Length: 218
Image (cartoon, rainbow, N blue to C red):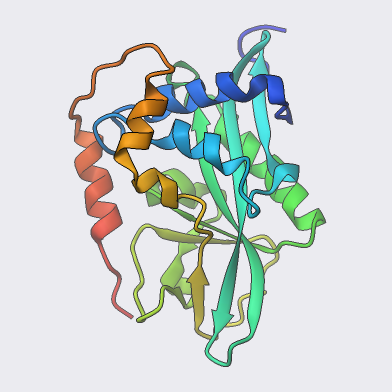
């Protein structure tokens, strides 16, 4: 196996800390000074909405270089009908291995698995530049929004089976799995388990702020 080859396999318990460190390396200072994604992954694994069957890593030469996880979520239409869907994330690749097709391969692999499990819609909140090439579209294209008819620019929808979202208004209800991440003290305490890193500013943080606070008008 050379450094450009990788395998995709299920995460195991012995991978936990390595995957958490991977997330820390991938997200550090990316969206905010520091990051919380390593803590998010740590608490996600014990949440009832975590989909363990879709917990995968990418490995090359015995080193984990990518990770993707999913949680259960719901859509509800205006008549109260509910649809079980997935929220994707985090998806992370070590910085030195990015732009080599690892993230793409992990998404395509898990999309197939998710469809086999009976899921046909995946949603995530992120930078559209990173996901539209994988078939994600604006939530407005599928009439999917938060309560109050709120269509964030960063709310992205992927149909795993074309046409399953039939144009009716759907309200998105994500899992509350990330709620503990609002506790900055808990995040900081968990971060002490890893080698020290300096928090700082970089332009991607402003890019994230713009995407995450922008709203599309119907």
